[in-house]
Each structure stands twice: as C-alpha cells, then as structure tokens.
Length: 621
Ligand code: TEU
Ligand code: CA
Image 1 (cartoon, rainbow, N blue to C red):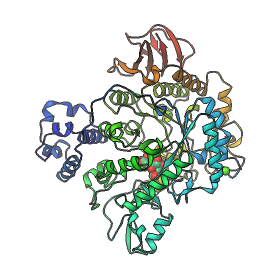
Image 2: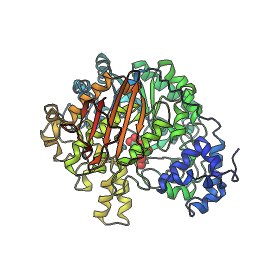
Image 3: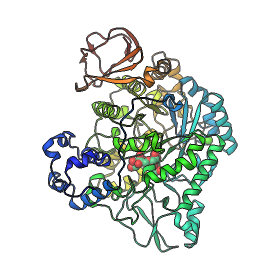
Image 4: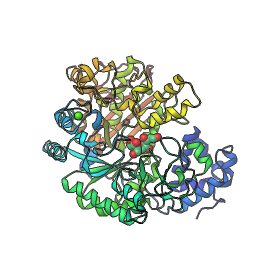
C-alpha cells in the first residue's frame, strides 16, 4: 500500500505511478532526468508540491495514492518471442470516409467511393483498412457521435454497399476493421431519448445523469455537463455536448454493446479500433477534478476516468463476450496511457486488447497542439527507443490520424524538405518493430491546408475553441491559434488528380481544399518514379520481403547522438540497417555506418561521409 510517506522511488516502481509521473513531467516540460536522480527518488511524496513549485498539490497526492493502490497488477517480463499473427505483419490504412472519395457528386465521400479506390490501396500494399465511423449519426463530430450502431449513415450508403465493400476487401486478401465508439453515443440515440422521456426506464441508467454538475471540463471546451430540463438533471459529455457518456457500470448496457459488436463480427468484419476506450470507467462518485491537475493538463477531472477503477474488468469482459469468440483484432485509442499501462492493457495472457495507440509522441514537452512550435524529431526518436526497449511487446506505429495536423508542416514547413521528410517518416514507421497504421494522404506526403478564413473550418473542436479564444484575442490571433492545431488539416478531401477539388467530387466538397492538389495528387505521383507514393510502395514491398523488418530484433546504434537515428533489425541470418538524419543540416555519419547495398533512400545517390538534410537510407550490409 502506498501512502503520502512513500517515496518518489516507490511511485516510480509502480507501473501506473511511473506512467503518471512521466506524463506530468512531459506536460510541465521538465526533463525525465530529474527523477532519475537517486536523491530525488528518496524524497517522500509529500515533497512533490514543493518540488513542482505548487503545480501539484496535497489533494492531488490523495488521488494519486488511491489510483496506484487500485492497480495491483505488474507487467510480466518481456519474452522476446513474437508469435506470428496476421495483424503484426499487416499494414493498416485509416480511411476518413467523409473525405476519401465521393461517388455521387454530393460533396461527401461514401462507401461506393471507397470501393472505387480499393485497387489503389491494394497496389500500394495495404493489408487492412480502418474505417472511421460510418454508422448513422447526426454528425456533430463526424460520426464519432453514433445514433444507431446497426445502421450505415445514409450519406455513406446502405448496408448492401457495406456488405459489398467487405466482400471486395476480403476478395483482395485484405481485412477491414471498424471504428467502435462506445465511450459515448449521440444524444439522438434512442437509448438517450428514452432516458430523457422516462427516468424510470432501463435506459435511464445507460448514461450519467446527476442533479448537480461537477467541475469536469469537456475536451471540446466548457463544462462536461449539459442540462436537460426534461429531467431537471445534467448529463455527462466528455466530448461535444451531443456526445453523451455511457454508464459502463450498468450491466444491461454492456450486454447491449456486446450483442451489437457480435453482430458486426457475424457480418464478417475483422476487428475494431476502440475510440477513447481507456475513458469508459469513471470513479463511482464522479468527484470534482483536482484543480492543480486540471490547470496543468488543460482538462478538469481527467484523473477520474483516464484509467478508471473497472477499466480492465470491462475490457476483459468485452474480449470474452465479443472479440475472442471471433478472433477479432482490437486496437484501443488510449490517450494518456504510458508504456507500463500499455503493457498491462495488451499482455496476451490478460485477454484485454491486442494493441494500443499511445499519443505522447505527438506532442513535445510543455506544448500543446494549438501552440506555435516546431516538432523536433529527436523527440520521436527518444520516444521510440524507450517504447522498443521497455514497452509492450508489440506496438502500434503511427504519426498521423484524423485528429492532428499533418506532421510535415509541424516539423519543417520549408517546401524544399517536404518530400525528404515524408520519406524519412515512412522509413521510420515501416522499419521499426510494430504494426504500422497510415492515414489517408500520408502516402502522398500531404501537408497542412492553407486555410485563410474561419468559415473554411468545420470541426466542432476548432469552432468551439475559436469562440472561446475570441473572448480574449482578436480575430487574427484566435484564427492563427486554431490553425496551429485544427484537426481539419487532416480532414480535407483526398487529392486524387489535378482536376477541380482534386477529383474527389464532381460537386462541391463539404470542406474546401487548397491549391496543393494541382501538383500533389495520387495520379501525378503514380507516374513519377521518385514520388513519395512510389517510395511507400517500394518500402512496403521491402517490408513484406524481409521478415527482419517485421519480427527482427531492434538494436539502436549511438542513441545519444543528437539528430542521428540509426538502428539494426536482426532476424536469423539477416541484418538490415537504417540510417537517418533528423535535422535540416548535413550531419557526420556514424562510425557504425554500414557498407553494402542501399535498398532504399530518399536521395537519388548514396551519401559520402555526411548525411544530407533529412536523409534516410535502408541498407542491407
Ligand atoms: O479522439 C479522442 C481524443 O482524445 C483526441 O485525439 C481528441 O480529438 C483531442 O485530443 C481532443 O482534444 C477520439 C476520436 O479520434 C476523435 O475524432 C473524436 O472526436 C473523439 O474521440 C470523440 O469521439
Ligand atoms: Ca457522396
């Protein structure tokens, strides 16, 4: 049992404690080394408030101790053996259906549009598709607000279209996973409607109604509580005010969800990406969030649900009741989960999830998505070294999704480096150990949109924040801040050709796209030997041809040298070597630099004794 008298060292020896301390340091922009110091480790927890100059307080320690004492499991030692499984070898590709391909000219992507492009995906070497939500929804958050879990959104097509898509995916030897949004439902879901109408109905307990709100805040701004006069009560929504959090402590709700999931598996889907799945279990009494933590993290209440009391129980039950009987693959979206808890969530013997998406590599210490900053790739390097050396046995490798700006723009917006960076990132993501997830357009090296006016943005998060910031900032400043982080950068239509609207639609797209598609589009890149797209195709083919790139051990070479990121993949007789320059300047090559055959490089000729800006090479020594 931990108490206030326990030392910082005791906390760091606890898996959850270690993850929390590391996350807090990251948030404060304080180096990890601070807590590596043995003297600091001997300090009692009660010294934390002084040590952090009041950024953490005594009340937080109570929460911390309760959280830690609630987790008695410890991750097992790594086995170093990787049981071959399809999803370890597969390359996943995330489709944002609204923006992928419009087949009928209404300006909105749809299922027949995806069907049209299956050959493109197959030629690229994609093995599995992840579809962002396609269920019936009022689209307050582009489908992450589900009104009917068993119906396809009319704008996207019909159940018959979905069956055809699934058949065609399978016919090509590919798999398909769905987005499963079960932390919350739309307020238009019949369950919620029934709960509003009749507080005595069984559905009433499917949501979190309270007579009084607590101080929790929503990820999309403002209070996490919405008042419903029908019941003279408030209901919890961690996201938009039309996304009502489900009450996972209600067994009848869980049973409904299990049945719904099994129905999709009966239909033949191969697995799921589980939206914010680590948020499903909330502290029973829904206590106020600690204000110090709220201020530090930007959200109040998070410590009461990011790793809630019954998280593991619910996941195990989901696995047993729904996923396991079908051998379904699962990847959890788990914001705030660190390396040690990721081990617990994905250990095969524990029967919870197959993989989790961590997010700490998408931010740099002390900055958030809406800050103006340059992303230093050395941060990505350190993140992967730590996760490969002491993380879950298998991890999800990704750097783009529908919730973030395009990273190339954040790393270095100089157009001269665009393609080099795109290919460098490709090499990192496809030659480290783990399952790679690409996001649509990443294979073209897409960059942030040149939005010029707030009226061009659509995302509920961006629009809410803009309104909030406008109260203290002028229009230009608030717009600039939104542009730093808006999720819409990743949500504009996929540029297929240089035609109007990138050939995405014959109508008017639901969100405008800038002029970039005139030069950067799939058709142009297919016809250009050294395009980003062809680099991806070659790299994906190499990954399939060399088991070392999937199951091989990873050995990092001179990990402490800044801007240099080099590693080996070793499997039986085969060793491959990756050499990268993470900076926009030439750097000296490593003493370990390989000789041999260059399998793939982002420059046309081999380097001499220096690596050029963002140069990245895959060698077979
Ligand atoms: O995202 C959850 C999440 O925490 C974020 O990535 C989020 O977009 C951002 O941090 C908010 O500040 C998932 C989905 O990926 C996202 O598109 C949804 O909006 C969200 O859940 C709610 O379903
Ligand atoms: Ca359409």
